[in-house]
Image 1 (cartoon, rainbow, N blue to C red):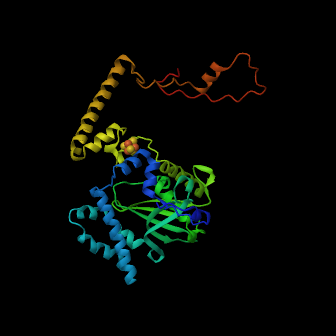
Image 2: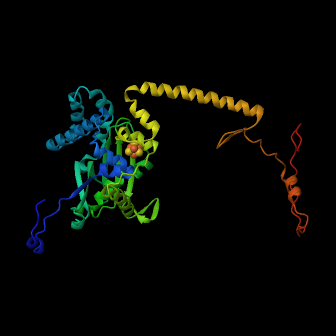
Image 3: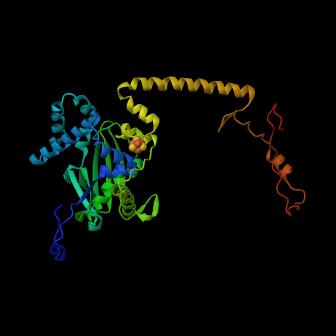
Length: 368
Ligand code: SF4
């Protein structure tokens, strides 16, 4: 960076510090496990599996179909154009792209195309101003939206295409960092200042399923009723941004996270089993066989334990005990229980309660 003269600084000609750009996926990595973000950056890990290729190609084909129809203004052609392009995909990934895009044409036919605002739109906003003392420019957050539509009563509709295997519930869709990040970014756009509601759809094209989340800007956030949805989203984003700016390298290993982590082979504190599975990418068969053998062994051990406690009583381990179910409490009639528990000193009630009809004993069974 060129050195600035005192005159430049005095007369406000201070050199502008370049903005620091935080993409949604990188910030999300910091929010999930900071070490993951750090390792991906350090080792320049760019996910390049066949699945990711298929997802990228799927997105490109949808964008192409939309642009083609936008040009010709013939929206009925959108699904046809998409289908026509599928056989032209790279031959090595074509079978998987076709499987992954199985339900795209249904979705393209049913979407509110007349309300389309844009496809593959990049939006951003400034989160923090420049801090010359810290030597950094303004913090800009950015993300790409697959499709954006205008909804009823100045609401917005977001489509996010998911070509992978993962399925989400509606509750999971609401909790996803991607959902809250994109909604919050949309609310910060000057043209969407009046937007209250955002309908967020994850289109799981491999399965034909949809996960939906609705976010109302000024309504209470379900888990934090003292905050509006917008404030709650901002809080979560800010915490992830703080980790990113401080270059945090904390590890938060959990089996679920590690199983999805792109940096798992570089990580020394990864969940042991998840790393074992990741290392066996060429030998998944062996891992599955191992599960079958271990499950069979575990079932046999459980069976043996059940029979042991039936004969000898409970078995105690270090932290748990295996025992038979406790026998059911002996059941008494209400009248018998009352006479047993009534304290002797208790005064007689003034009015005698109505005598309860005695239950008729069943034939051949004794009461006690
Ligand atoms: S493997 Fe687990 S602990 Fe290691 S970086 Fe990835 S998510 Fe974090």
